[in-house]
Amino acid sequence: MTTEQAKNLSESALTRLMEALEQGQSEALKAYLAVMSRFHRYSWGNILLIYSQLPTATHVAGFHAWLKLRRFVRKGEKGIVILAPMVGRKKSDQDELTEDDGSRLFGFRAAHVFDVSQTDGESSREPGCVLDRLNKVLLNEKTAGFTTCCAALFESDGRLTIANAGHVAPYINGQELPVNLALPLGVMPEAEYVCKRSP
Image 1 (cartoon, rainbow, N blue to C red):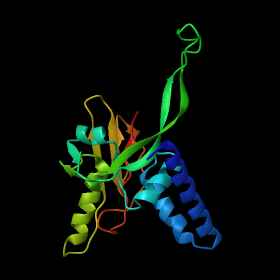
Image 2 (image 1 turned 180 degrees about the horizontal axis):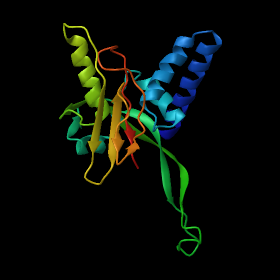
Image 3 (image 1 turned 90 degrees about the vertical axis):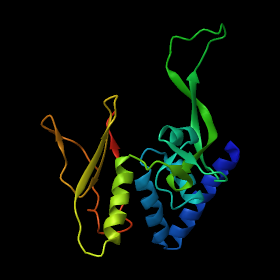
């Protein structure tokens, strides 16, 4: 798919959403907002693109990003097209960097990402995925009940990724960590556990 086709797909998804709202169908907006809550790092237009191509997507990444997570995209899977920014440095006529050495946005190109459901391999260690799996296990148990939980992943470079399922916020060095609010495990199958990452 070309960049122009991806832009057209995004515009048609926006048009369909607007038409549904004008007809009083708030379910379309609720579905879009549910997808938006899962992809807080993506632009509004890219969320529309993901939603229009695979509404059930939960965790997306590029082909090589999945390989780094020791997962691989299954043969024959169709990628989800998004618009990726093209960033670079502007050069002067003499091929030297100008005084403003900052990177600039030159435009967008079509790029492909894949949902976790399109991959095989090791289970994701991302805390949101871990809580999703635990929620499914609890919902499949014969006994009724729920539990709160907080899952965190500390990377070797010091980064922290955390997801919360109705638990009180954890503390590190006497400071409360910011976490996204979510339902406890075992309450609803549609519950979403969105990760928060430290810089």
